[in-house]
Image 1 (cartoon, rainbow, N blue to C red):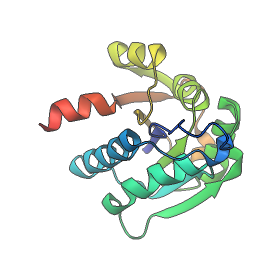
Image 2: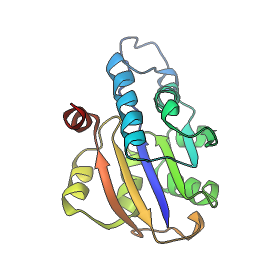
Image 3: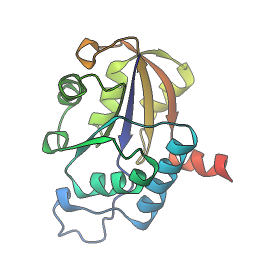
Length: 175
């Protein structure tokens, strides 16, 4: 079994409109949300063996906040290809770079993250799928399981959505 975790970067800071989009940092709320996601991952033993992360500043900062909750031997790949890409690019990247990693975390951007999750999900909770279709908020994460041994075997609608969480629901659960 393979597990894919698709994390949209946390809330970015739009205060300085002169900053190039690729260099846009997280907002204060974004830093807090990313930390909450990391803690949630730790509490539920969601430990990726490999991370594929966009090179954009806000995705790298999101990753920085969750790294203390990951294992020391997690492989991390920063990929420019995940910035300004489509869902087909994300799926191709997952299939080619996932290799034999049993648990893969992708930290990326919308709309590609949402479209990738919907493209790969074939079953799971109809309520969670509907939530994911309606909105994939910043720092939202979908967890999709596949009955496959290699990422190259993963295809359209082959996965089962096992979780979809958002930072606002994490705060409600952890208090």
